[in-house]
Length: 182
Image (cartoon, rainbow, N blue to C red; front, top):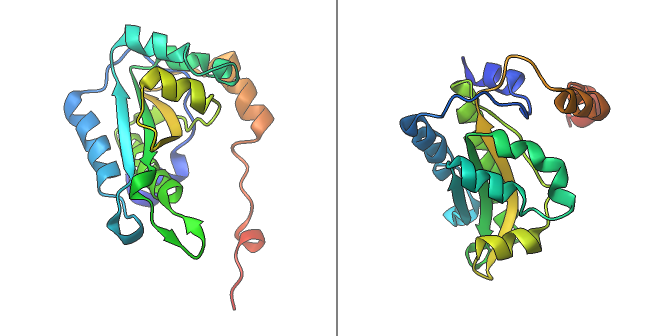
């Protein structure tokens, strides 16, 4: 699959098979995040990786009330939490870049995973305060997002179908609405 095919076909996956992610592929995914660009090469991203089923189930209960909608992560073979170390922030034009840099890195990981048929789902519905306390993060860390990673099941479950329908996740604005040539 070439890069455009990966980008075009990647979608949020919430239903995972029991198949484990091989360790060597997990490292390729993590390496894709490590190689991401960042403002002044600050590399503020820090990742916490869960691969043990019992720890993943416990993590799924530690995302706060808003995170209850993320119950499906308990069935994923891997969950990665993307954090940014604000001590590594670069501020340009009155904008902090640690969030942008970490988002780019995490997205590269998701695209690399999809190359191997491994799905993911960018998640922001969690209580950062509760989750940070559970993870015992340094005060300088911000949680940017988290994602389950795993091989998709053949069929989407009712929850996934409903979310896809409600969000209209397959609809994208046309270029004419988002691009200006000058």
